[in-house]
Length: 64
Length: 160
Image (cartoon, each protein chain N blue to C red):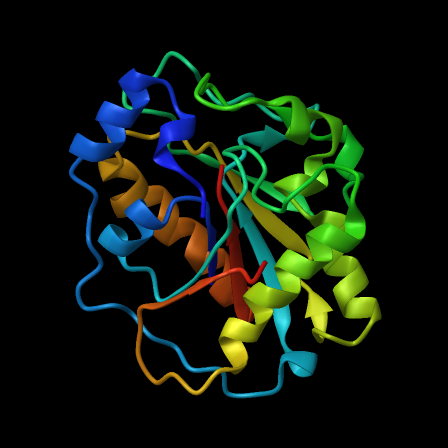
């Protein structure tokens, strides 16, 4: 599964499972030295694996 | 959502005109056991290397397609940023490599029981590879084979 910074590219490449995040390039897990915020992103990515989908691409935006 | 407009004009044009390779068909591997029993391996394109490893080669025109193995017990603070791109602010990943190579975070997820275990090694690539032919044909399959050998259940890609 992939964390993705630009939905524009994600929709063209079509990875099997992708979590699109709203952070600037270079900040895929939100913020430096903020473990809870980083874990929040990782948790959202892990939930992609627990969904009901049987085929990809599964492209989900991180909830605000 | 991340915005193309955060980039300088030159990179915006590149992003909009680059022939992105479409996965077709989309490969699909269903999870066959609970996450709490799964082994996770990280794949980061932040261009990190260990201090003793060879740095990614900035002079390769199409981008250095090689990868490095990063042991899971690595101190994240020891990772060296070798990403050649000037399209993004490196300050975040330099001050906290976990931002793009979450070594500590995945250990915490395993300690919490959210995932079963962390693989003994992770993979580091350098994400500026505009000519990805050798990545696609050689280094990525080779790296994937390592995770198959390790019986990794989940590969988490963190891009930079």
